[in-house]
Length: 111
Image (cartoon, rainbow, N blue to C red; front, side):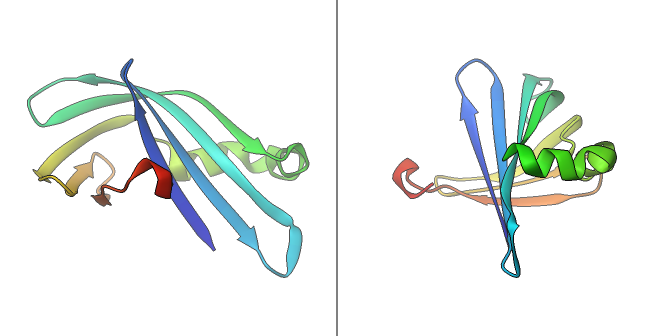
């Protein structure tokens, strides 16, 4: 099971947190946090640059260390994101890797 949460900070940075767990193995509960900066390139597009990433707890980082580059390749935000639809509660976008994102706005207390 995994859950992803992205929060945008005022200084043109975004942090995505992917929480995961394998119920059969309690050691495999943790999270991958990715921090990226972005620049507005057009009215509907932003360029994204990976700034940092961490896996917690440290025991999981030790397990994933050999395959960390592969893990980052899966979740790497580098590239661009184009917003194709937006209203008060919904944002739809696509990126340069052919992914489509449907984001629903929630109250910060729900995150």
